[in-house]
Length: 130
View 1 (cartoon, rainbow, N blue to C red):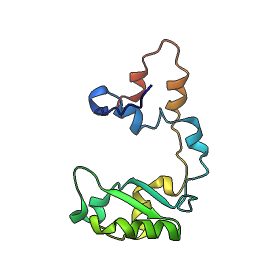
View 2: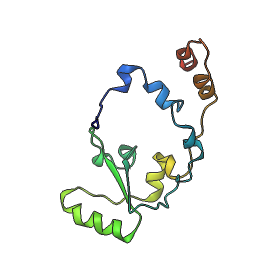
View 3: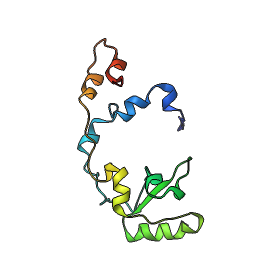
View 4: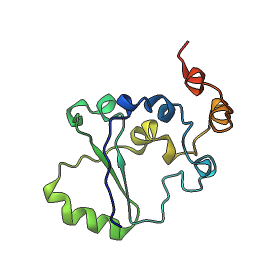
């Protein structure tokens, strides 16, 4: 058995509304104890959402990564690879404005329970924009 990497366009599959409404997240996400900037890992790597709002010249339509060093070892690791990257140090307030999971766990909407506890209902009707 091998490991597969699957790429898909969530918009094409109609899944985007469920992802953006936070209805298909794991139950543990609402109680996550790792939702802050104090991490046990040496580095935290994530998508850098909203970079275009704060520093438009850093925006790349293919994506921009957020790297947070959490330990001296993480700082050394980043320094060792930084020669091959365009790095811009940003203020914590700027990053956490778009990365709310660095501040607090996700809050699920009431529609989430309807999604998971449905019994022969049209779940797509739950998420129609009004």
